[in-house]
Image 1: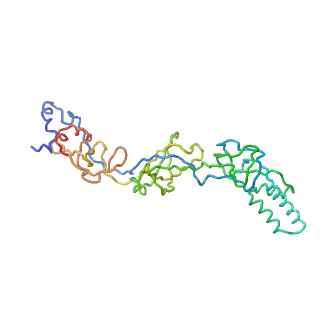
Image 2: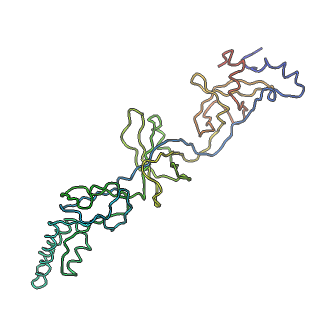
Image 3: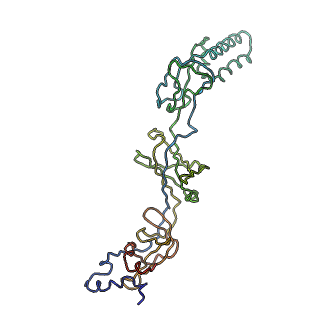
Length: 333
C-alpha cells in the first residue's frame, strides 16, 4: 500500500462505521479548485504625511526695522494671500520711499524716466509691495510704516517676532506653509523596491479620515534608512479643505494593472521548509497527495499560482489540517 499517496487511509475504519458520512464530513476537509480571475496585485506600506516643501515660504525682509503692529501673532494662524502679517518701521525703506516721491515730482516737471525707474526699482528690490509703491504716486505722499504681507494662503508654522521686536536684514520673521497639497512619505522595504515600477495606483488611508484617496507618485528618494532598511517613496494628495495635517500616520495600498491570475485561497496553501504545498484530491474519496507549487501573494486572502497546479485540479482548502495528519508525521514533505 502506498501510504505516501493515501494519506487518510488510516482513518478509513472510522469512515466505514459512519453510515452515510463522507471522509470530508468526518474530518471537516473542504476542497476548492483554482479560480481564474482578473485582478490587480496589491501591496501595503505605511508612512506619514508631510508638508510639500515647494509650498513653504519664508518671510525674510531685505531691510532692518521694528515691528509696530503684529497681525500674525499666533503660531498656526491661518492667513490669506495678500493679508497683512505685520506693520513695521524701517528707516531704510522710508528713505527709499522719499527718494521715489522726489523722483516722481522731479519727473513731472523735467522728464527723467531713468531716475524714476531706478528709484522705483529700489523699492521693489527691498520687497515693498506694489500697492504701497503705487500709493505713493497717487497720493503724492509717503507713510512712515511698511506692511509685510503674505504671498500665499497658508498657516503660520514659524513666528520669530513679537510686537515691538527689532529685526535685522535677512532675519526670518515667519514661515508660511500652504497645505492644499501634502506629501505622503511611504516607507518601502528595500526587498520591495523592484516592485515599485509595476504599481500603477496608490491609495492612502490617513488616520482620522474616513475615506482613502488616490495619491500621485512624486519621487523615489535616493536615500535608504540603514537602520530600518527602508527607502522613501514620496506621494502627493489633495487637501483643499485643509483637514489633513503633517505628521499623520498613513496606510498606503499599491496596486498593479489588472491581469488574469490563477488563484487559490491562502488557506489552501501551506509553507514548509521554504517550499509551498497544496494537497491534491486523488481518484478515491479521502485520497490526497501533497504537491509542491510556486506561488506569490495577490492580496491578504489569495495566492497567485505560477506553476504546479492547473485550473481543473481540486485541492484541500484547509491545508493546515494536514499538518496533524499521518502525512506530516511520516515526513511526506
